[in-house]
Length: 149
Image (cartoon, rainbow, N blue to C red; front, top):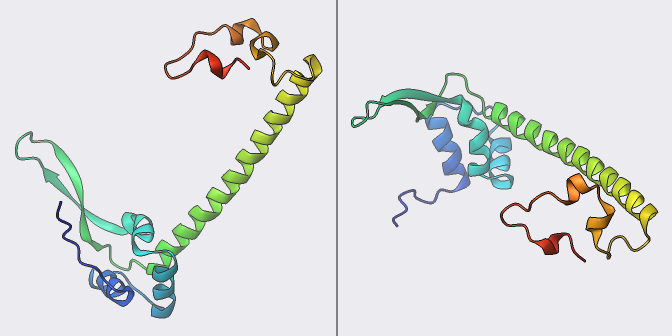
């Protein structure tokens, strides 16, 4: 496999973005983000600012869109950074919320099983669940040992 993209220094990466039409008002901050976050991680956040063209497959006639190596006029580097920071904050909020749900479910499950038996976690747990749940057929990839102690 041949990789055709040459290595670029951080200033060269920034110059590439500017040559494609991205507006950079604070070069020092932009270079800092490229060095700390990385070109390819940030590229997901400036992707929506790229221009697209409609192309038709010569064999099937099917239409599709293709991203061009240029940005819409007035695309700001800082806008991509703001999207990145928003996404980061959203992921942190979601992780926090999911952790709270997970811990709550664990507490409820362990409390209910503990009420049935102090050793429910090592006993045949199938006996501790409602038959409509415990007797469901196993899906592909699941084994009986998933439920047996």
